[in-house]
Length: 443
Image 1 (spheres, rainbow, N blue to C red):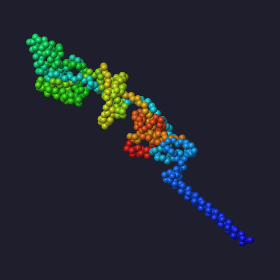
Image 2 (image 1 turned 120 degrees about the horizontal axis):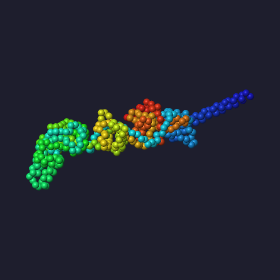
Image 3 (image 1 turned 90 degrees about the vertical axis):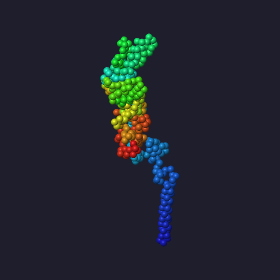
Image 4 (image 1 turned 120 degrees about the vertical axis):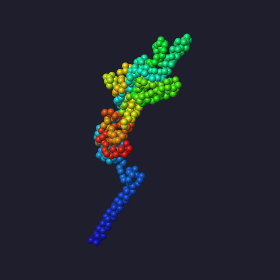
């Protein structure tokens, strides 16, 4: 009995061993098949490295908020936040900071500038002598002297004018022809003499030694058309002096003299058609005002401004911009404008100080000043692009172009839409990597 049992036991052990061997072989075949399937490049669940990644654990758009996809399991809150936290800090930041919406706002702001009053050169009237001669007496003593129409300006000795007066007297005594006598009288009128002077010559019967010259205009005397002592005045006097060659044969032959400050003195010689000075009635004035350089983008001719003078600060004046000019002086760049100021009572005085304010109305996105961070010349804001599962905001940096910057708000002219939400305090989200990123772009 014992001998028959041992072979049967050996057969059972062999069967069990073969079963274990078959199971081991089947397990190895299954593992190799799985590896072959995972390494297949056409599998849609693979990433670029060939390692399996569950599709439901990813995000279709890193710049948008996670969306529910039917039939797929969404990641847990911690997994979602962990994913956004793996992105570079200069690209995406997760924070619970408060957000504000840009929105379209009708922004009304103002630019203020300081300047001075100047003569309106369009109202300058040139006073030129019509005959050459020497100034014997001069009643204009200084620049900006006020003269009235018909007021005596100077006593002029002119041999040429005396010759014409003698001709008139001779015709008046010898000729009975009224036409000839009127022609002689008209010639003296064209030389600048008044009817009273001509009648006095006829009564006296002789030509005087000097001829009085009267002002044909009322206003302030300017030795230079710009109101100052140099610059344009020198060029104007030089230009009038060029008329000497045309009148040399009929003048005294003495050239007109010009002082460095364009003023005139007794004893000076003047030539025919030489401009002696200008007269400005000053019923309208210019306001030369310097605004900040950024005001040049919005200031334009025709815009109304409110002007305050130091002479009467309680009486503002409304003026219109006539010209806008960018100016660079003394290492500074600013916008200079010319204002047309009414001055009917001549209350404004030359070189008195002004303060002008120009108001601008614009409709554009407006954000708090704390929402904009400046990296060099580049302005950036942090735009909310999504929300994590636990309610944290996902911000991404965006470069924008700013307009007017006030005390509390900043105008955004480019790079931001009205419906965008941004972080209230941009400085708390910026790190050194963000600064290096924008500085490396040449900003």
